[in-house]
Length: 284
Image 1 (tube, rainbow, N blue to C red):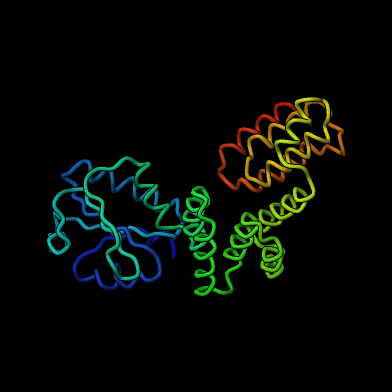
Image 2 (tube, rainbow, N blue to C red):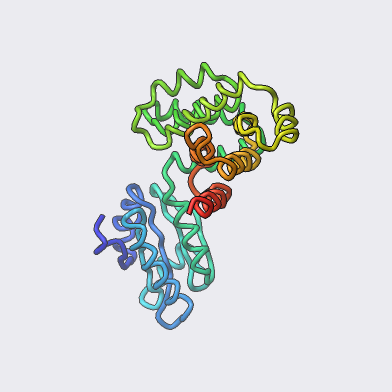
């Protein structure tokens, strides 16, 4: 969809074509506004800018209630500005009154998430709660609906590793094309889990490190063992210690292990950002 018609005026005659039909291809934000109501003008300007930034993932329909109040009455608009969200021909959300730009951006981001991104948000919550069985069920259901979606297989392999079902994870991962985005996350998690299986428990390794702070092999093994149980901050601390004590240890293993852990943390991780900065500052 071109930028030219991503923001357009809507009236009762064009509503079916420009809003209902178009919403089957892309979410439509319907803004009720009037030139005489300053907050609604400001909302119109902010939404027009955001619509351009999202490059065709969403469109903005403008209803000037000073010209015609038919649609406002039909959709029970009580004041200005007022937003209605139409998706797949259905009214799915509404926001009434002035909103900060961050709230409007957040609303659009949720509307433009891909199925994999929406699923990832749900998974993050389930994993945080430790509900791994539910996470597997969610992914299996998603794959029944979209059996050829490699992103869902990436997530399933990742959760299977967390559950300790390494052979099942390997099988799922083998069916994922090598160039699939974020395939390296379950791949790295699987490698950490396999390596950790041959190591002592984290507590025993921590005792070794406490007894000899310069035992870099014990530090590395502790980092692996902690990563396998998702104690990422402790693992990164051990890697930083290796890096600071001996950059050449096992061909820069402290740094390369940190990079592998970053892939497990995913995009937007504050923890990864903080340790990436620490690593960069030490190295430079």
